[in-house]
Each structure stands twice: as C-alpha cells, then as structure tokens.
Image 1 (tube, rainbow over the protein chains, first blue to last red):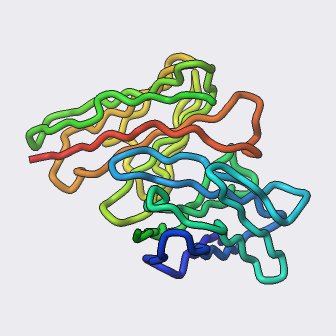
Image 2: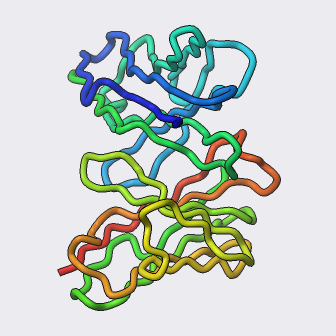
Length: 114
Length: 118
C-alpha cells in the first residue's frame, strides 16, 4: 500500500537558521510528490512538486525539496527560516492509477522563533 | 493561480440536521473535485472524489448515504452531511484540479469549512 511518513510532529528552528522537514514515502511505480503548507483554519497552499527531472526542486517562498530515490525521501528545506514560515506542512504522494488522489502525511508543525 | 472557494467557512448546527457545504472553482472549470476531512492536529483524509455529471467515488469507510456529494456543474460541487451528529464535527476541505491533468500537477484547495454539531 502507498503511504507517506512524516516522522516529526514538530520542528523548532531559530529565525535565520536552515530548516528541514522530513518526508519518506512508499509507492508502487514512479512517485509524484508534493509539499503543501497550511496556516491555521485555512486550506492548503501548494509549495512544490516532484514529477520527474532534477532531484532538487525549487518552490514557493524560498522552499526547496530534494528527491532521493534510494532513500525514498523528499525532505523539505529552506536555507534561512522566517517567523512567518511557522505553519503546518504536509507531504503528499499521488495515488498510482488514480484521478489524482493524494495521500497525505500526518503533517509537521514548524515553529520558527525570533 | 486557480482559486477555489468554500461556503460557508463555519457552520454550527444541531444534531440531526443536515448541512450543505459548497465548493466552487472560481476561474477554471473543474471536472474533478476532491473532498477531505481533517480532524484536529491530524492529516487530511480523502473522503470522496467528485466527478462532474456522474456519481462520486467514495473512499472505503465513508458512508455515501451520510455524505452526499453532487457535482452538477463544472464549477460547483456540494457536500451534504445528512443527519449530522457531534462526531461529524470536523474541518472539511475541498480541492480541484485542472481538467485534462491526470494528477501530475497540484490540486487547488479551498479554505475549508469548520462544522460543529451540537
């Protein structure tokens, strides 16, 4: 069965420091991976995706993610965190053979302190 | 980018009543929309896939008679929670994707509807 794991419930970083939010996946076939961000009581906003091509994907708001096939990981990164980056981050994978159905990880709360 | 709206943003109802939630794609036509449910501090769980002009496809464990989905036009899908009970209280989020896209691209999410059943 396909699945997505986000091993950390919460990540705390100081403003200006680099951040990493981890994601690993299990899929049959080629993975199509996404990162979304959710602010309180809001829907999800798309950050970036990996479909094919370069393993390092750049997205919105300075975020990037690295696809690692051997480690089945798709960690989200940002070189310098901002307080405004504090939110809930979800990793997702497209269900193979579906109409675009997504399976989401449980989410990781990112807290950036001044 | 594409915009998806939901209405209402928040609803409080009495147990036993039915509640309708609307999901609209504002600047594009969406042949496929998705309905998710999110419990506090948990992930989104796909409830059903809504296809314009046909019956929705429900995920395992989701009662189709309780969660009625209608996708009558290319810009509107509705979710009706029938005979709501307190355990149905949750955050309901819809999303849509661009027609012709077989899932390679991102979904566009609505802002969500907070349902509280007393």
